Image 1 (cartoon, rainbow over the protein chains, first blue to last red):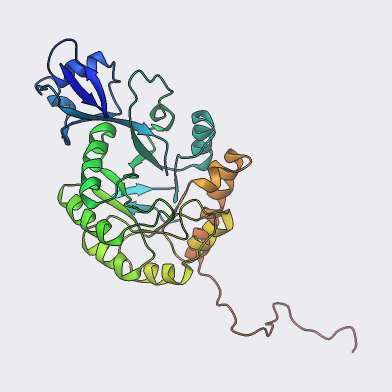
Image 2: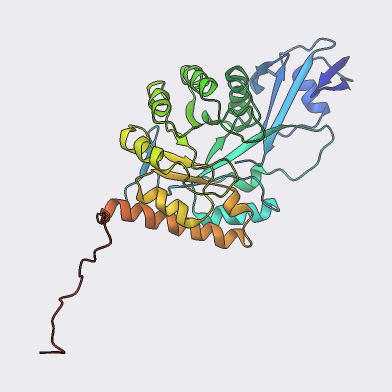
Length: 66
Length: 258
């Protein structure tokens, strides 16, 4: 299904959960957070959180900053 | 020296470090180690798909270092709460440097949104360290809202201009019941020492170390300045004379002419 990840159109090729997308994107096991439609999804819920076509996701990671 | 205590957690070092503007993550890591800091800020950015860049986190995670995620980039209290929740999830800490500065030119914090966000984030269980204007009234309001510290600015971020808000910082330090961390604008070890001599509880330094000719040596210089300033404050500084008349520190024996 087609999703938007950080404003870029992305195809989720297998499965339909946040965990499936995290696998596909090879996200690291720590230091990232995901929000679906502006709601943060804790990592413990990634495998249950079902995605729908056109969902908008934000994925962040650490950056240098003061 | 007394330990610094924030939200029940003890710190030996009173120097907090920002991680922006270093030429490399390796240099940043060396400066962090040299500074002796136990509190290091980290920002957040959106990942780029397929990005394989060096993970900065591995350079700053250490058992003795408290990560302090910031909310840089948010413009409102609502956005700050969202960013805070993302940070707590990503970095596994409820400590937060709250910074809301919608104006990209001067990066001055929005006091109204900062107070509102502090109130909400405290209710959500965050340990909130708000970056704020050097406004004594605002600092009291933030304290009443449950902020763990206040972090008034010395001068605009990255300007290295020193304690431009000196007189207001004095009032804030006098009135505060939570630690006062002087943040932003500290450009030289002497600025940090001055803030500590005034009774500030800690200093947060980034640009002055990161863009120094030798950031590792500068980190050591700041470490020593913060210690010297704090030690002087605890020792009790002598009172400055109000006029230029000298006060002899040696006996004025007239043994040459008599």
